[in-house]
Length: 147
Figure 1 (tube, rainbow, N blue to C red):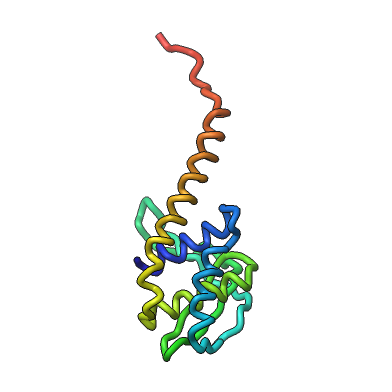
Figure 2 (cartoon, helix red, strand yellow; figure 1 turned 60 degrees about the horizontal axis):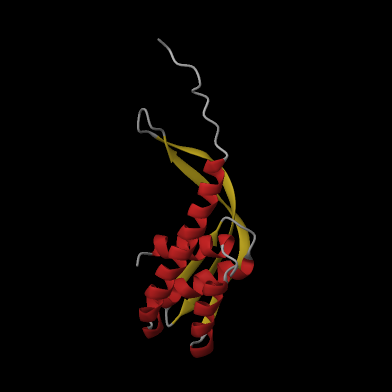
């Protein structure tokens, strides 16, 4: 599983599901119990530039800055990075630990794919339920027929 998808699953699951970061905490704890995790950069806030592609001319430009929380850790010489658009320092740390575990190729990561896919399915199910609730209230303004 690619880093982008894995991170999206963990962040979206933490925000939307009742677990509130429970899976990320569980996965990180598995690593923290068994390995020496060195914190390179404590969770702190920073700014990143948002790059956007303009659709008509396909040109890139910077829309502005976004406040993020970021953290860096090291496990067995491999560096992990946790960045998210939130003030959740704990989740940023857990994301960094999980990323470092994948980068180091630790054996625990082999079993995580199924758990991540289940988290993604639960998030998608909840998201669809919210969308269907919103669509029930949608008003159709096409009430006049033209002849």
